[in-house]
Image (tube, each protein chain N blue to C red):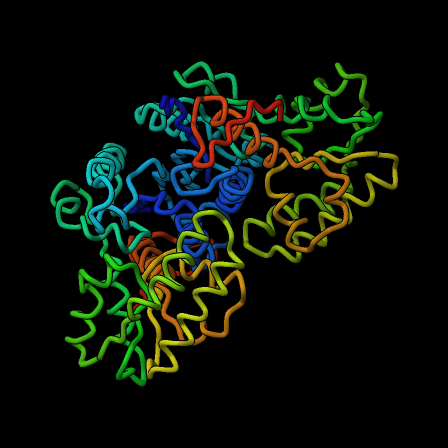
Length: 249
Length: 249
């Protein structure tokens, strides 16, 4: 039995979003016993510079701490790394260059999921930090599929997104959910057929208020979790009940 | 600002109990921002021999994998280690001997919490694996406080505890909760004033069904989480709002 997967998670951005990923990995695994679950090492160290402030030019870069996390996970011989924080993917290139283990890109796996939707949406709304929106990871990949991106405007960002995101970090999930649902509704009202919750704090907040917007949303944390479970299934793990699926996700 | 804490978690026994600890650490932390949360590295690798079977003489010892986990966490220079699995404390002595970082003992911190209860109970029921019950960690420490321990009988273990515990590992939390609540009720009916949920699968199951038995229960996972938060507060971390509490737990 070749157990070749050892997943490394660069967490802490924020800590709750990290647990959300770990929870979604567990929930996506067809496990009948402890040993069927993915082996995961999580570096959940939130003493890292604020990503949004760094990109806005008002704070230090988190790159040194991100590189440290990559180094530590590689010391433990992880086979793959994931990072449940969209904004931190701003530093994806230097991290991937420094890592022996491949780092899955959250926007890449998410847009691959969008490509499999049937019917494929013509216009997708993005809920993300200014840094993620400015980087264009989602918009460029969606454009390659012929999908238009609809972004929040500046007022929507300041009124709903930013306070909603930081409310999650304070553990105020109800407040966060109400704020972010207003943003979701505004994007849907402007013609988005689907939403990508491209900040890992957002699905946590919408779930906390059981927001109906979840039904039209694609959750990159969940896609990342499912991708990790597929890696595990395809690594040769034999499940207790003989379940062995070559998933196409 | 001296950030001297780096918590290491030996998880995977089971994976859901590990997430339960991480969730309870987050919930117990007076955080206003990501950076206020504890730095935690979690080795959540469930490819480890079944503890209950090992102690029953029907399976391999998990000690080699536990020692590997201790070694890996020490390589990352963790300052303290916790193990959210009571039964695995059977191997506490060799693990503690092999670890540079001190390993908190789950029964020790839990009984210290019991000692602070007012009024102090005269009789406490234990819900635990056969291995934990046979080891006597809880009974001996409770006896030093003049507290009697009430244990499940063999039929209760086979009928309720064992299937309840393994149902958690399959993710069947409702089934698990109903089984374990019956055991809790039986111990309370026989005169237990409080219960110690001394298997980390049990609080997860009772929470899933919102069991009223939780009100009379001491949850070692929660106590371990609070102990970790106290370590963080006492390590010199400056919280965002200036909150700095020397907790007595």
